[in-house]
Length: 247
Ligand SMILES: [Mg+2]
Image 1 (spheres, rainbow, N blue to C red):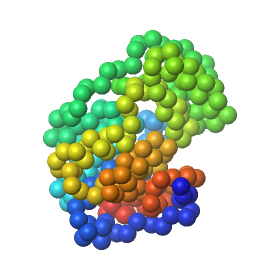
Image 2: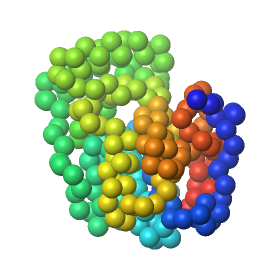
Image 3: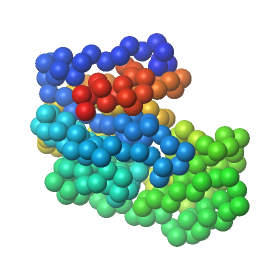
Image 4: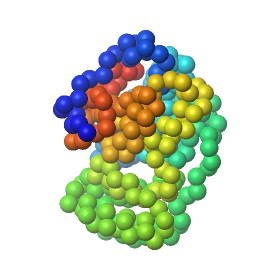
């Protein structure tokens, strides 16, 4: 485990590509796009989807967004995305041709959303309900972390769900929501199979992606200054990622 401060920047993409085909797995928030006060407050450049498509074309389709957001939410912010996508922490996957890969996930029980709504009412928590998850954000008051953890933990136990922790957010998701599993599933099929996987991400949930990429002969690139990581390289912020990707 290394901190971002001790990791060097990755070699240029063109140099890495000379050693063999590359596959890129890219987190979204905090990796390609700056984090905002609320999940809906992000600013996405108008030509973002076109630039991602151009990157994917340069790598013969071997680029996937792997985000905690639902696919529909990604496209609300970016417009139609003609690249491979894994939304809901990898649970919901699509090919670049918009075909679903793997099984359609089941949404959380309605009673879980009701419990979250009740819990968050009149507090400084920002509740985010997703297609296959529910998240409590506490960026406005980081001291709420313990309350969020305790609440999500008890609901997870009751309903057989998993708790995902991120930067100022705790989220309840169905079992199997794991960015590493999404990398493995993409890498088992064309056009990704046989390439060297590179996972780029900023948050705790991206560590699964870093580990999967390493196990499959590639590596992780940590974005930002998180303390410990299974990544091999680091980049300072989304602007550095965009520059490195020549996006
Ligand atoms: Mg992120």
